[in-house]
Length: 370
Ligand code: FES
Image 1: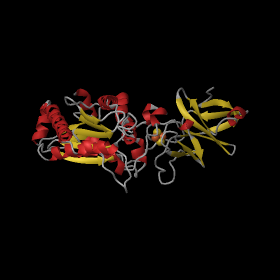
Image 2: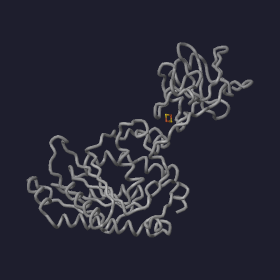
Image 3: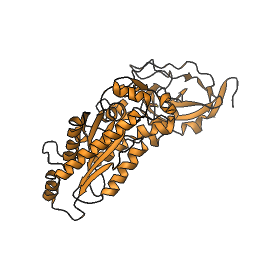
Image 4: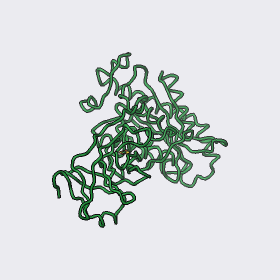
């Protein structure tokens, strides 16, 4: 064990039989990534500069240890970040071999330095800008972009948003998931809860991923979220699920940091289907949006379905397209959601000031107090 500042971490033969990067502990509980490349041993801190990923559980890419959480790279001997990011450096440790044993220095030979990284725009403080109620409509239906078709859920969502922008005097924003290019959730939380970050790890890593538009609306811009989905095989659309899986980073902040990203948000749902299962789809949507912190107006969803055996789709389309009742129901849902939003915002003295044109910032600590 420790001898004059060195720790015996194992026999050469035994360690050489394992992976080229492995996690060892020195000096109590300090984690170190021990590396063997071409018979040469080296060691760097086992804690990644990003959000603390376990470098000792990573792999080797040339001379760089790759963090298993999000792929940041650090030189196996110097601890420096990959070319262009050298200033992002983790501590390095000395390694020596004596009597067939591998020894690692307890004290690092260099320090940790973190290069300043421009925070992602979504990471800014959550601050409701003054102004009227803002309504985001999220269309989740899937269709061929070159050969579009009539969508009953989109039709009713458009009616709801039109009412918001007209009689209700709201700002509105329509987001069609079908128009966005975004990756499916890659399950970083399954490596560790802390590997699922806010903003989403994918959003931070991939500038081409367009789900940032949805995060922006959900977390920063909107007071009301109206989500429309068709029923597909008794469930919401595939794009709906692809979107909500990516919302794990919002829910995860509550679990990890008691940090509530969605505050004073109202959600309502529009569900249409040629076939049945409305209550199951609504129940799933209500459960998810409740879990991430939304509240609901009375009667938070509207739906239309002609039943399990209604395969005559032209009639299904016509039943929605030509129904003034269904269009009125969509407008009434929007009105109930906007009314609930006004109640929520007016329930706080400072939020009342917001609606009159004042300003209030919600920081994490403030959210916990509220
Ligand atoms: S890359 Fe290491 S924690 Fe994210």
